[in-house]
Image (tube, helix red, strand yellow):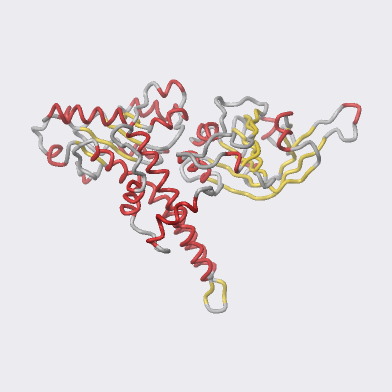
Length: 408
Protein backbone atom coordinates (compact mmCIF):
# COMPACT_ATOMS: atom_id res chain seq x y z
CA UNK A 1 0.00 0.00 0.00
CA UNK A 2 1.99 2.95 -1.27
CA UNK A 3 1.11 6.56 -0.75
CA UNK A 4 2.98 9.33 -2.52
CA UNK A 5 6.32 9.29 -4.28
CA UNK A 6 9.80 10.68 -3.73
CA UNK A 7 9.00 13.23 -6.43
CA UNK A 8 6.48 14.78 -4.02
CA UNK A 9 9.42 15.79 -1.82
CA UNK A 10 12.56 15.81 -3.94
CA UNK A 11 13.44 17.02 -7.43
CA UNK A 12 16.67 15.08 -7.40
CA UNK A 13 19.51 13.70 -5.34
CA UNK A 14 23.21 13.07 -5.88
CA UNK A 15 25.55 10.88 -3.86
CA UNK A 16 29.32 10.40 -3.70
CA UNK A 17 32.11 9.09 -1.49
CA UNK A 18 34.08 11.93 0.04
CA UNK A 19 37.75 12.24 -0.85
CA UNK A 20 40.59 13.43 1.37
CA UNK A 21 40.87 16.76 -0.43
CA UNK A 22 37.18 17.42 0.28
CA UNK A 23 37.41 16.72 3.99
CA UNK A 24 40.96 17.40 5.21
CA UNK A 25 41.69 21.10 5.90
CA UNK A 26 45.42 20.38 5.61
CA UNK A 27 44.90 19.20 2.02
CA UNK A 28 42.57 21.97 0.85
CA UNK A 29 40.94 25.13 2.19
CA UNK A 30 38.06 24.82 -0.25
CA UNK A 31 34.51 24.23 0.96
CA UNK A 32 32.94 23.10 -2.26
CA UNK A 33 32.00 20.18 -4.47
CA UNK A 34 32.02 19.85 -8.23
CA UNK A 35 28.72 19.03 -9.95
CA UNK A 36 27.80 16.79 -12.86
CA UNK A 37 25.59 17.49 -15.85
CA UNK A 38 22.80 15.35 -14.42
CA UNK A 39 22.94 17.18 -11.08
CA UNK A 40 22.59 20.49 -12.87
CA UNK A 41 19.31 19.34 -14.37
CA UNK A 42 17.65 19.74 -10.97
CA UNK A 43 20.08 22.18 -9.34
CA UNK A 44 20.16 24.53 -12.31
CA UNK A 45 23.17 26.04 -14.06
CA UNK A 46 23.06 29.57 -12.69
CA UNK A 47 24.52 31.29 -9.68
CA UNK A 48 22.08 30.79 -6.87
CA UNK A 49 22.10 30.73 -3.08
CA UNK A 50 20.07 27.90 -1.53
CA UNK A 51 18.78 27.60 1.98
CA UNK A 52 20.25 24.36 3.24
CA UNK A 53 20.04 21.77 5.99
CA UNK A 54 23.09 19.75 6.99
CA UNK A 55 22.58 16.40 8.72
CA UNK A 56 25.18 14.03 10.11
CA UNK A 57 23.85 10.51 10.76
CA UNK A 58 25.68 7.77 12.59
CA UNK A 59 24.75 4.97 14.95
CA UNK A 60 21.63 4.53 17.02
CA UNK A 61 19.88 7.84 17.69
CA UNK A 62 23.04 9.72 16.75
CA UNK A 63 22.27 12.65 14.50
CA UNK A 64 23.34 16.24 14.25
CA UNK A 65 21.40 18.86 12.26
CA UNK A 66 22.64 22.28 11.20
CA UNK A 67 20.97 24.98 9.13
CA UNK A 68 22.59 27.45 6.77
CA UNK A 69 23.07 27.95 3.05
CA UNK A 70 24.92 26.69 -0.01
CA UNK A 71 25.76 28.53 -3.21
CA UNK A 72 25.83 27.28 -6.77
CA UNK A 73 28.42 29.22 -8.77
CA UNK A 74 30.63 29.10 -11.86
CA UNK A 75 34.25 28.89 -10.72
CA UNK A 76 35.37 29.97 -14.22
CA UNK A 77 33.11 32.96 -14.56
CA UNK A 78 36.08 35.21 -15.26
CA UNK A 79 37.64 32.69 -17.63
CA UNK A 80 35.07 32.36 -20.42
CA UNK A 81 37.61 30.75 -22.74
CA UNK A 82 37.75 27.69 -20.47
CA UNK A 83 34.02 27.00 -20.27
CA UNK A 84 31.79 26.96 -17.20
CA UNK A 85 32.59 24.81 -14.16
CA UNK A 86 29.66 24.78 -11.77
CA UNK A 87 30.41 24.05 -8.15
CA UNK A 88 28.52 24.09 -4.84
CA UNK A 89 30.08 26.17 -2.11
CA UNK A 90 28.90 25.01 1.32
CA UNK A 91 28.89 26.44 4.82
CA UNK A 92 31.41 25.49 7.45
CA UNK A 93 29.48 24.09 10.41
CA UNK A 94 29.44 21.31 12.96
CA UNK A 95 28.32 18.76 10.37
CA UNK A 96 30.90 19.56 7.69
CA UNK A 97 33.58 19.61 10.40
CA UNK A 98 32.80 15.92 11.05
CA UNK A 99 33.23 14.84 7.42
CA UNK A 100 36.01 12.33 6.86
CA UNK A 101 37.54 10.65 3.85
CA UNK A 102 35.42 7.64 2.89
CA UNK A 103 32.18 9.04 4.31
CA UNK A 104 29.19 9.28 1.98
CA UNK A 105 27.56 12.57 1.03
CA UNK A 106 24.00 12.91 -0.25
CA UNK A 107 22.90 16.24 -1.73
CA UNK A 108 19.13 16.32 -2.19
CA UNK A 109 17.06 19.18 -3.56
CA UNK A 110 13.61 19.52 -2.04
CA UNK A 111 10.62 20.56 -4.09
CA UNK A 112 10.67 23.92 -2.26
CA UNK A 113 14.21 24.66 -3.56
CA UNK A 114 15.81 23.73 -0.22
CA UNK A 115 18.98 21.62 -0.23
CA UNK A 116 19.67 18.84 2.23
CA UNK A 117 23.27 17.69 2.77
CA UNK A 118 23.40 14.30 4.48
CA UNK A 119 26.77 13.06 5.69
CA UNK A 120 26.89 9.36 6.52
CA UNK A 121 30.03 7.89 8.14
CA UNK A 122 31.29 4.58 6.79
CA UNK A 123 30.13 2.74 9.91
CA UNK A 124 26.55 4.04 9.84
CA UNK A 125 23.78 1.51 9.31
CA UNK A 126 21.59 4.07 7.57
CA UNK A 127 23.86 4.26 4.50
CA UNK A 128 22.36 1.24 2.77
CA UNK A 129 18.89 2.45 3.72
CA UNK A 130 19.42 5.84 2.09
CA UNK A 131 20.89 4.25 -1.03
CA UNK A 132 17.80 2.02 -1.23
CA UNK A 133 15.40 4.91 -0.60
CA UNK A 134 16.84 7.01 -3.41
CA UNK A 135 17.21 4.09 -5.81
CA UNK A 136 21.00 3.65 -5.92
CA UNK A 137 22.06 0.03 -6.20
CA UNK A 138 25.72 0.44 -5.37
CA UNK A 139 27.99 2.48 -3.13
CA UNK A 140 29.15 5.44 -5.27
CA UNK A 141 32.73 6.39 -6.04
CA UNK A 142 34.44 9.75 -5.77
CA UNK A 143 32.27 11.29 -8.50
CA UNK A 144 28.64 12.24 -7.90
CA UNK A 145 25.98 9.84 -9.16
CA UNK A 146 22.63 11.57 -9.55
CA UNK A 147 18.95 10.73 -9.95
CA UNK A 148 16.05 12.99 -10.93
CA UNK A 149 12.48 12.50 -9.76
CA UNK A 150 9.57 13.69 -11.88
CA UNK A 151 5.87 12.97 -11.76
CA UNK A 152 5.39 9.61 -10.06
CA UNK A 153 9.06 8.67 -10.45
CA UNK A 154 11.45 7.94 -7.63
CA UNK A 155 9.66 5.02 -6.05
CA UNK A 156 6.49 4.81 -3.98
CA UNK A 157 6.75 5.86 -0.37
CA UNK A 158 5.70 2.75 1.46
CA UNK A 159 5.90 2.24 5.20
CA UNK A 160 9.63 1.50 5.36
CA UNK A 161 10.54 4.42 3.08
CA UNK A 162 8.66 6.82 5.32
CA UNK A 163 10.60 5.60 8.35
CA UNK A 164 13.81 6.62 6.60
CA UNK A 165 12.36 10.02 5.73
CA UNK A 166 11.74 10.50 9.45
CA UNK A 167 15.44 9.87 10.07
CA UNK A 168 16.44 12.75 7.80
CA UNK A 169 13.81 15.14 9.13
CA UNK A 170 11.34 14.99 6.24
CA UNK A 171 7.76 14.93 7.53
CA UNK A 172 5.58 12.72 5.37
CA UNK A 173 2.16 14.02 4.33
CA UNK A 174 -0.32 11.36 3.25
CA UNK A 175 -2.13 12.56 0.10
CA UNK A 176 -5.11 10.38 1.07
CA UNK A 177 -5.24 11.54 4.70
CA UNK A 178 -8.74 12.98 4.41
CA UNK A 179 -10.13 9.52 3.68
CA UNK A 180 -9.08 8.41 7.16
CA UNK A 181 -11.13 11.01 9.02
CA UNK A 182 -14.24 8.86 9.15
CA UNK A 183 -12.25 6.01 10.70
CA UNK A 184 -10.61 8.04 13.45
CA UNK A 185 -13.50 10.44 14.15
CA UNK A 186 -14.59 8.31 17.12
CA UNK A 187 -11.44 9.30 19.05
CA UNK A 188 -11.77 13.06 18.70
CA UNK A 189 -8.44 14.43 19.89
CA UNK A 190 -7.63 11.54 22.23
CA UNK A 191 -5.08 8.91 21.29
CA UNK A 192 -6.33 5.39 22.16
CA UNK A 193 -4.11 2.55 23.33
CA UNK A 194 -1.94 0.93 20.69
CA UNK A 195 -3.83 -2.37 21.02
CA UNK A 196 -7.12 -0.66 20.16
CA UNK A 197 -5.61 1.28 17.28
CA UNK A 198 -3.87 -1.78 15.84
CA UNK A 199 -7.07 -3.80 15.89
CA UNK A 200 -8.94 -0.95 14.21
CA UNK A 201 -6.30 -0.88 11.46
CA UNK A 202 -6.82 -4.59 10.80
CA UNK A 203 -10.61 -4.37 10.98
CA UNK A 204 -10.71 -1.56 8.41
CA UNK A 205 -8.66 -3.54 5.87
CA UNK A 206 -11.03 -6.48 5.30
CA UNK A 207 -9.54 -7.12 1.87
CA UNK A 208 -6.21 -8.18 3.38
CA UNK A 209 -5.78 -11.97 3.47
CA UNK A 210 -3.43 -12.64 6.38
CA UNK A 211 -3.58 -16.40 5.91
CA UNK A 212 -2.67 -16.45 2.23
CA UNK A 213 -0.15 -13.58 2.32
CA UNK A 214 1.23 -12.98 5.82
CA UNK A 215 4.11 -10.79 4.60
CA UNK A 216 1.83 -8.51 2.63
CA UNK A 217 -0.71 -8.42 5.44
CA UNK A 218 1.80 -7.32 8.05
CA UNK A 219 3.06 -4.43 5.94
CA UNK A 220 -0.46 -3.39 4.95
CA UNK A 221 -1.61 -3.32 8.57
CA UNK A 222 1.44 -1.35 9.70
CA UNK A 223 1.12 1.06 6.80
CA UNK A 224 -2.57 1.68 7.45
CA UNK A 225 -2.16 2.09 11.20
CA UNK A 226 0.74 4.49 10.82
CA UNK A 227 -1.31 6.64 8.42
CA UNK A 228 -4.23 6.63 10.85
CA UNK A 229 -2.00 7.50 13.76
CA UNK A 230 -0.27 10.40 11.99
CA UNK A 231 -3.66 11.81 10.99
CA UNK A 232 -5.03 11.60 14.53
CA UNK A 233 -1.75 12.83 16.00
CA UNK A 234 -1.95 15.92 13.77
CA UNK A 235 -5.35 16.72 15.29
CA UNK A 236 -3.99 16.26 18.81
CA UNK A 237 -0.94 18.42 18.15
CA UNK A 238 -3.00 21.13 16.43
CA UNK A 239 -5.29 21.39 19.46
CA UNK A 240 -2.32 21.69 21.83
CA UNK A 241 -0.67 24.37 19.68
CA UNK A 242 -3.91 26.34 19.54
CA UNK A 243 -3.96 26.35 23.35
CA UNK A 244 -0.55 28.02 23.23
CA UNK A 245 2.51 27.67 25.42
CA UNK A 246 2.26 30.42 27.97
CA UNK A 247 2.90 30.41 31.71
CA UNK A 248 1.27 33.55 32.98
CA UNK A 249 2.74 36.35 30.91
CA UNK A 250 5.85 34.34 29.99
CA UNK A 251 6.38 32.01 27.05
CA UNK A 252 6.54 28.45 28.39
CA UNK A 253 9.64 27.23 26.56
CA UNK A 254 10.06 24.21 28.83
CA UNK A 255 6.44 23.25 28.24
CA UNK A 256 6.91 23.43 24.49
CA UNK A 257 10.11 21.36 24.57
CA UNK A 258 8.48 18.77 26.83
CA UNK A 259 5.47 18.46 24.54
CA UNK A 260 7.70 18.12 21.45
CA UNK A 261 9.75 15.38 23.14
CA UNK A 262 6.56 13.57 24.12
CA UNK A 263 5.38 13.52 20.50
CA UNK A 264 8.69 12.05 19.29
CA UNK A 265 8.91 9.42 22.04
CA UNK A 266 5.30 8.40 21.54
CA UNK A 267 5.90 7.75 17.85
CA UNK A 268 8.84 5.46 18.62
CA UNK A 269 7.17 3.50 21.41
CA UNK A 270 3.90 2.98 19.53
CA UNK A 271 5.75 1.66 16.50
CA UNK A 272 7.28 -1.23 18.42
CA UNK A 273 4.02 -2.05 20.16
CA UNK A 274 1.92 -2.03 16.99
CA UNK A 275 4.51 -4.26 15.32
CA UNK A 276 4.07 -6.85 18.07
CA UNK A 277 0.27 -6.59 18.02
CA UNK A 278 0.11 -7.28 14.30
CA UNK A 279 2.54 -10.17 14.56
CA UNK A 280 0.41 -11.71 17.31
CA UNK A 281 -2.66 -11.35 15.08
CA UNK A 282 -0.82 -13.11 12.24
CA UNK A 283 0.18 -16.01 14.46
CA UNK A 284 -3.38 -16.32 15.76
CA UNK A 285 -4.69 -16.33 12.18
CA UNK A 286 -2.39 -19.25 11.39
CA UNK A 287 -3.36 -21.17 14.53
CA UNK A 288 0.04 -20.91 16.20
CA UNK A 289 0.23 -21.23 19.99
CA UNK A 290 2.61 -18.87 21.76
CA UNK A 291 3.34 -16.88 24.88
CA UNK A 292 3.47 -13.12 24.25
CA UNK A 293 5.61 -12.15 25.97
CA UNK A 294 7.35 -15.22 27.29
CA UNK A 295 9.31 -15.56 30.49
CA UNK A 296 12.62 -17.39 30.66
CA UNK A 297 15.77 -17.59 32.73
CA UNK A 298 16.88 -14.62 34.88
CA UNK A 299 13.60 -12.84 34.36
CA UNK A 300 14.11 -12.40 30.61
CA UNK A 301 10.98 -11.71 28.57
CA UNK A 302 11.40 -12.66 24.91
CA UNK A 303 8.61 -11.25 22.75
CA UNK A 304 7.29 -14.63 21.59
CA UNK A 305 7.86 -18.19 22.81
CA UNK A 306 6.31 -21.04 20.80
CA UNK A 307 4.35 -23.13 21.61
CA UNK A 308 4.00 -21.42 24.99
CA UNK A 309 5.26 -20.72 28.49
CA UNK A 310 4.35 -24.10 29.95
CA UNK A 311 6.22 -25.95 27.20
CA UNK A 312 9.35 -23.86 27.72
CA UNK A 313 9.25 -24.38 31.49
CA UNK A 314 8.80 -28.16 31.10
CA UNK A 315 12.28 -29.79 30.98
CA UNK A 316 10.68 -32.87 29.37
CA UNK A 317 9.37 -30.88 26.40
CA UNK A 318 11.64 -31.45 23.39
CA UNK A 319 13.99 -28.53 22.78
CA UNK A 320 13.77 -28.90 19.00
CA UNK A 321 10.05 -28.09 19.21
CA UNK A 322 10.68 -24.75 20.97
CA UNK A 323 11.01 -21.50 19.04
CA UNK A 324 11.88 -18.01 20.22
CA UNK A 325 11.11 -14.89 18.21
CA UNK A 326 12.26 -11.40 19.14
CA UNK A 327 10.51 -8.47 17.46
CA UNK A 328 12.29 -5.16 16.95
CA UNK A 329 10.84 -2.65 14.53
CA UNK A 330 14.35 -1.16 14.30
CA UNK A 331 17.36 -3.34 15.13
CA UNK A 332 20.48 -1.22 14.88
CA UNK A 333 22.92 -2.61 17.49
CA UNK A 334 20.17 -3.87 19.79
CA UNK A 335 19.93 -7.28 18.15
CA UNK A 336 22.59 -8.50 20.60
CA UNK A 337 20.08 -8.11 23.42
CA UNK A 338 18.19 -11.08 21.98
CA UNK A 339 20.98 -13.62 22.39
CA UNK A 340 20.66 -14.37 26.16
CA UNK A 341 16.85 -14.31 26.28
CA UNK A 342 16.19 -18.07 26.11
CA UNK A 343 18.92 -20.48 27.22
CA UNK A 344 17.09 -23.62 26.09
CA UNK A 345 16.87 -22.39 22.49
CA UNK A 346 20.17 -22.27 20.65
CA UNK A 347 18.97 -21.06 17.26
CA UNK A 348 16.94 -17.91 17.75
CA UNK A 349 14.88 -15.75 15.38
CA UNK A 350 14.56 -11.99 15.12
CA UNK A 351 11.91 -10.22 13.03
CA UNK A 352 12.29 -6.60 11.98
CA UNK A 353 10.90 -4.03 9.56
CA UNK A 354 14.20 -2.17 9.35
CA UNK A 355 15.33 -2.03 5.72
CA UNK A 356 18.87 -2.46 4.52
CA UNK A 357 20.75 -3.70 7.58
CA UNK A 358 24.43 -3.83 6.67
CA UNK A 359 26.12 -7.08 5.59
CA UNK A 360 28.54 -6.69 8.52
CA UNK A 361 25.65 -6.81 10.99
CA UNK A 362 23.86 -9.72 9.33
CA UNK A 363 27.13 -11.65 9.15
CA UNK A 364 27.47 -11.22 12.91
CA UNK A 365 23.89 -12.40 13.41
CA UNK A 366 24.63 -15.55 11.42
CA UNK A 367 27.77 -16.16 13.47
CA UNK A 368 25.63 -16.05 16.63
CA UNK A 369 23.01 -18.42 15.17
CA UNK A 370 20.38 -15.67 14.99
CA UNK A 371 18.10 -15.91 11.96
CA UNK A 372 16.79 -12.57 10.67
CA UNK A 373 13.18 -12.50 9.48
CA UNK A 374 12.09 -9.57 7.27
CA UNK A 375 8.82 -9.00 5.38
CA UNK A 376 9.28 -9.95 1.74
CA UNK A 377 8.65 -6.39 0.48
CA UNK A 378 11.82 -5.20 2.24
CA UNK A 379 14.16 -7.87 0.90
CA UNK A 380 15.10 -5.65 -2.04
CA UNK A 381 16.74 -3.21 0.40
CA UNK A 382 19.32 -5.88 1.29
CA UNK A 383 22.34 -6.94 -0.73
CA UNK A 384 21.94 -9.97 -3.03
CA UNK A 385 24.19 -12.15 -0.84
CA UNK A 386 22.05 -11.30 2.20
CA UNK A 387 18.76 -12.13 0.51
CA UNK A 388 19.79 -15.77 0.07
CA UNK A 389 19.90 -16.06 3.85
CA UNK A 390 16.98 -13.83 4.89
CA UNK A 391 13.67 -15.37 5.86
CA UNK A 392 10.22 -14.04 5.08
CA UNK A 393 7.38 -13.97 7.61
CA UNK A 394 5.82 -16.88 5.75
CA UNK A 395 9.01 -18.94 6.21
CA UNK A 396 8.93 -18.44 9.97
CA UNK A 397 5.23 -19.29 10.21
CA UNK A 398 5.83 -22.48 8.22
CA UNK A 399 8.63 -23.52 10.60
CA UNK A 400 6.56 -23.00 13.74
CA UNK A 401 3.49 -24.69 12.22
CA UNK A 402 5.60 -27.74 11.35
CA UNK A 403 7.09 -27.90 14.84
CA UNK A 404 3.68 -27.48 16.41
CA UNK A 405 2.22 -30.29 14.31
CA UNK A 406 5.14 -32.60 15.09
CA UNK A 407 4.98 -31.94 18.83
CA UNK A 408 1.24 -32.55 18.82
